[in-house]
Amino acid sequence: MKMKTIIVGLSIAIAVLGAAWYFLGQKSAAICTFSGRTIHAQTRAWITIGGKKYETCCVRCAITEARQTGKPLRILEVADFETGKLIHPEKAWFVEGSTVNLCMRMSPGMESPDQQTVYLRGFDRCSPSILAFSNEKLSRAFIAKSGGTLTTLRKLEIQAQSESHGARQ
Ligand SMILES: [Zn+2]
Figure 1 (tube, rainbow, N blue to C red):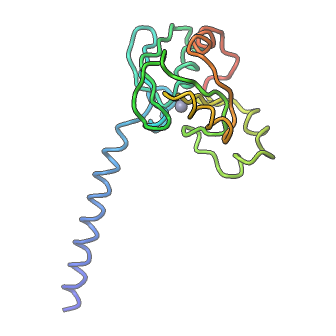
Figure 2 (spheres, protein in one colour; figure 1 turned 90 degrees about the horizontal axis):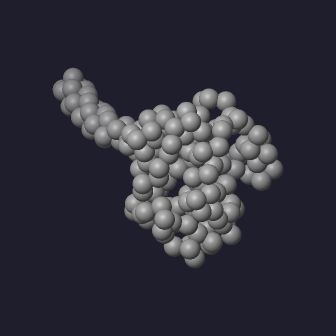
Figure 3 (spheres, rainbow, N blue to C red; figure 1 turned 120 degrees about the vertical axis):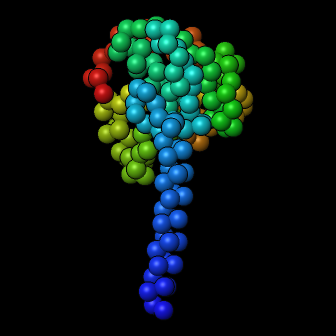
């Protein structure tokens, strides 16, 4: 009788583990080629580097790649941070350098103003963060809350063309 309970219990456990493994497997498909990080719907971008098309974890990661390899970058589509919907970069309002960076998964301590200098000093290919908004008003409201400044696609393209001084990561 007891044995039967154990077997039933084990079967359920295996089924649950199997389902979890299946769903995790589904998620792991969305990994950025350049950073190896999870691609978040709110920050992803479709770009070409050296003529090859990639989906990246964020616009900053793509700019870093272009700077490190010296290959030309074209930003094709960026996710609207509010909705996750892909939009044309010409229509986006870019917020650069806010405290929100989904790629870096910062600990709460690192997000606190006191320790911000520690975070800024280190090089990370996804930092300073770049987020895109389809709505100017929402982008300004975001800045009021989480910091950063508005920038343009043109300025980001210029950054992508400048030589990198950060270490390869
Ligand atoms: Zn990134």
